[in-house]
Image (cartoon, rainbow, N blue to C red):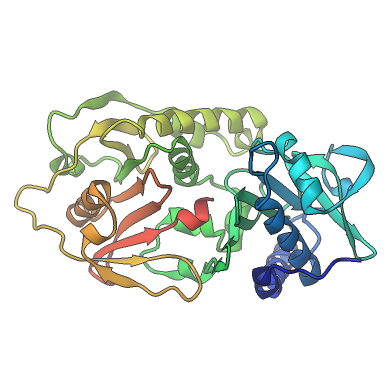
Length: 380
């Protein structure tokens, strides 16, 4: 029998998460999508979160556990590694197994039978919209699911940090000025799961956040050079001709893009561009994913006004938009990004801070001001 959960946040969010999975799985089924996970019940969700939370607070040989827990039976996991003996799903066993499964892409397989949760082994492969609970650090859990096309960043549903609960607000994608990056991270609308186009900016954002040095990416219209009015010349590191590795991969035939070698090549190209974002200054790419420059220093356009106010939002349920001066949103990177978008309204800017915060800046035609979307909760 499942023990009574003692982590209050697990009980608070379980029914909301259950509804999320029910809605998404049913919608995917109506679209004819196959290889989908089984809808998890609230009491199992609660038990998984509770056990994972208490495991996150323990240490083994001086290390805190980092674990990705996938809720699925072994027969739904492709070619899993199955333990001869099932293990009880307890904080003790999770901490003991953590060193073996902390590398990216490895999930600890967990399932339930007769109201008992057990660990059956590990897997690299999980079905679409499969419940995943990831232990990031002590007291910090992220509930997410795999996209149905199997490629790219998982879709975050909830972030739990101690007694702080953040439920991702999918309705945020309906904002008229919401960048495609944010829409893709939210996983809405559902047809984006089908993978007919890969959102390179999502993967680039994850790559930027991973190197931990902070950085800025400016996304400018293709076939336009107006962005040059907002950077200091000469540009430190222009790329001539433009690097088209990403663009060439994206332009490949859709059938080729489903093959593993294409996905591997795309990841390498994204990481190549992501590496340049660690260099001081801004990395500039265009809307066709061509790398134009890196190390660029942003400046106010000649004759342009100083940006004095922005609106900041976070795609979290019950969060409130806040009007602020750009200096209140962060340091010099954030100020520079806000000024760039204020001057170059057809462009966007992505800013990664060294402390893990991530913000997307875009011009809002509706509000007639720079809109800062704080999205670090979606990139965990």
